[in-house]
Length: 425
Image (cartoon, rainbow, N blue to C red):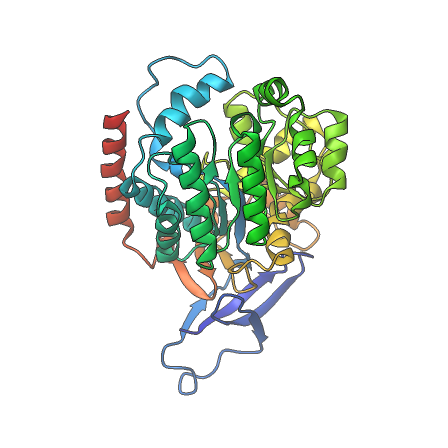
């Protein structure tokens, strides 16, 4: 189905130039958009074409998420842990590792469907995810991919391989990753944090990434415990260990958090061609600390770490925190917000082309111009203004309702799986 946008106020996402125009949207994984002088007459338009009137609305490129955990979707409102955590290792032990061990494929499917719906309705059309389900590993990535495809969201997936649950889950994680990537899916070789990844696993993960021409997706120095335990076990700090192992030579790698680093480790990351995923709200929620990311170079993009699916919210939170930690400005936070597209383009990732668009019904109290767009981005635009979303030329949200799946049925399934998960916890 060909889409036409009539009377659009198109905002160029790179230079903020606003053009009043009609648009023809190409379909396909790497499709584009055409600026046209007018919509074709009814008798000459394709029979299956759809015309959306965008008068008074803003149209721009949709969003991407540089680091997600869809497996946490069913955690919302879950029972309190049996013991209240007092530090980050206990948060992992009593909450997230307690939850991920109890996931099955049905729960994973429900989590992925609900997360994809929330992403779509928030204007997020490209998601890089980091999954964990130690006792439901086989086919987990395919299950997530199918759920995201059903909703219409593009994705890059990985399984979080670790030694924390023993040899069986470690080998299954390697096998699931190898199979998934061999099938032609785009993704990474996922690892948990350094302190749960032994030397043998680290080398196997790097070799697997090299085999499939991809990178690692790994948590780095999210908490001081990662540094302390890595140093105790392996005699090196986290980034030094990644450097010596060859992990930093994999330019597609995504290193998440990167909070507790020495100046030397920061220098190693600046010199490497890897990418950093900043997850401010999750770091605040886990009380692991904040840092300034400007010292890590230009390859910093924003994620949610599974806290939610709203990248506009992530940008605002990172801007507000960043004013205190690094004096970030409008341009700086917008650059990080859009860096996920630069990542996708640099490595030829599928599904983040020019035909991924969001239409805002934005009730601005003041004029929106190219000169002040970033002020509206930080202080005005939010998820409630997302009216329509297009991914790969397909209409996946129209008038704030998803079009590819039955939202009520999907969320009812999620609530059912949530009860099942909580019962096992």
